[in-house]
Image 1 (spheres, rainbow, N blue to C red):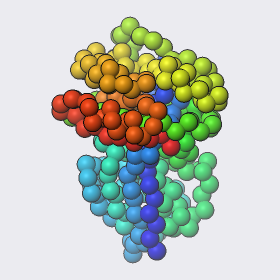
Image 2 (cartoon, rainbow, N blue to C red):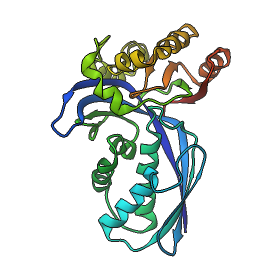
Image 3 (tube, one colour):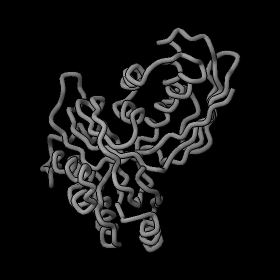
Image 4 (cartoon, rainbow, N blue to C red):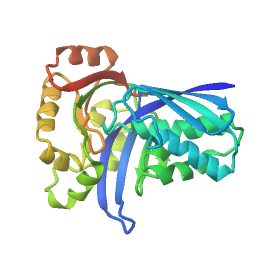
Length: 281
C-alpha cells in the first residue's frame, strides 16, 4: 500500500505578539493562510522501523521533523508497524513558510491512514503540538486564526484566491533569536486581528492587503536590514500588499491572480534570493 499526500506551505497575514508565557513560548495571535506551494510525501508500508529518504533541501536523518513525527506517532499508538517515507521538497527550508511543520503534519496524517490507527484530527493536533507550534495549523489547513502559542485554532472563511510572490534570501533566520530580541525593539504598524478577520469574511481583498502586519518584522529587519529593501522593491514592482512571513526571512507579495504574480516575479531584480510564484489555497 502506498499513500501520496501534499504538504502545503503557509504565510501569516497577521502576527501579533501578546507577551511571553511561563513555558518560554510567546503568546501570539495570528491569521494564517495556506499556499498552493507544497512538498510531497509518499508513504509505503515497511517491514519494521522508519526509513526516510529526501529529495531536496532537508536533513535525511533523525533530525528531520518527518522522522520525529513518525516516531512520536508510533510511541503514542504503540504501533509496531514500519514505513518508508519519501519526502520531495519544494518549500524552502528555514523560510518562515512552515515547510518542516507541514511535512510533520502530513506525516501524522499519512501514517495514521497507512497504519490504520483511526486517530481523529484533535488527537493528531495534540501530537503535532508537541513537535512544533505551527503543526496544528498545518493539520487543519485553509485559513485560520491561531492563538496561544499557535495551537488554539479557529477556522476562518476561505480567502479569495490571490497570486503570491515569495522572495526567500539565501540565509536563514533563528526564530528563537527573533523572539528573544522582541522586547528590545520599537514596533511598527501593529496587526489588527479583528479588522483582518472582517476583511476575510467580507471577501474584501483591498482591506486584506491593507491590513497585512507582522510584529516580528521590526526585529528581523533590524538583524537583516536587506529584508526591508526587498519588501520595498516588491511593493514598487506592483504587489498589492507585502509582508514578511513568520519570523522570516521570506518576504511575500499578494497580487490579484497568478498571472500578475508571475509578471511581477519576472521583472524583479533581487540577487542572492529564491523567487517563487504560487497562489493562496
